[in-house]
Length: 296
Image (cartoon, one colour):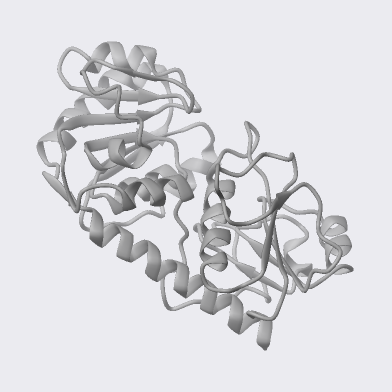
């Protein structure tokens, strides 16, 4: 695989979130540090972080040996067009084009069933976010959980929830752009630190929940759609407590009650070295899976 030119095709934005972009940034970074030629294509031309070692562009390079597509549901026409350029490996794709790809990998639970081209793995392949990983590597090895709750409110209005819990618990709330808090820690803008320092994380189903679980946070998952809620019900982690529901503002008092219980049952510290080790192991597993797919 080190002799192949790989193109990663992904996207981000209000319609798709940031998880696909963040995890493919991390994988591209990993490839660059392991001598694997890779180009990252963002379909809407978003720039990479400052100093990022991989070229990011808005179109597939002319010389490409393999395309990794991480953008949710594909159409048959799209996969046919991409396959005319190079073999295509789709990630978390439940679209009609999935079965036409060279292979399909599910990092998230697949509630619609696998296809004949699904790659089955006996080891964890989940990819965490680039920003999450980079800030974890700069954190102390042990972080005390001194925030009751981190709220990631990119899909719902968190103001009513903050007003209720702010009387009894410390919280930091982010909508993806701005931070609000009832503590004096708003200056800590490192995303992973806020998660690691929190006893409970409230978010919709997505990469934030997985990062929270990695940091031993109890999780309250409030979902915008029934699809997200079904995915939430597939989560099982014996080390933490997880509760999920379709978000309904009328349920905020119950969410606040659940938060109180989860805070009382929370871990007190997180071992960031263990988190980084898990991220590295999953990256290697994912890379080994691609190598196996591409060479067989």
